[in-house]
Image (cartoon, rainbow, N blue to C red; front, side, top):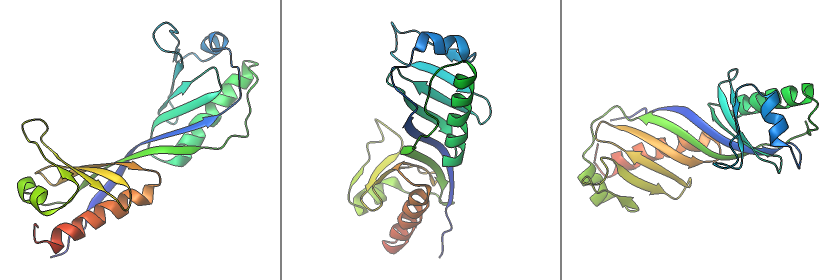
Length: 182
């Protein structure tokens, strides 16, 4: 039996720095789709339509971008923020380097799974169905966490590169086949 898992990147969280000592009050006036309530959260939240993303901008110049499905989309979103800030005469650095913090992928093994059997067979798993309906599998190489559900659907998180998600899900499928669980 061969399993060809399906894997789709659903979210990338990445960070960068676009300057320092940024006046978020001024930025909130320039970026129309933004929210800034410093008494509740120290950063400004900016929503971008194209590409669809959200960015947290901090006084320090650090930007955390989330909601995209590729690193190229992250770059595009940050470039859009920089363009809009420069148009508003906010001094920012457009020479930025992106660090991927977390990649989340959704997958499907295409088969029903017995999570009790998997938790008894694989090491580094946690399965408490009274608390959460999925099995938590902490894979060491690549270093990711995979949530596995009886439907065969799964969520892979903790990757730093998109290829790690695909590699992890394929490795999981191979392990499950090897131990005879599927």
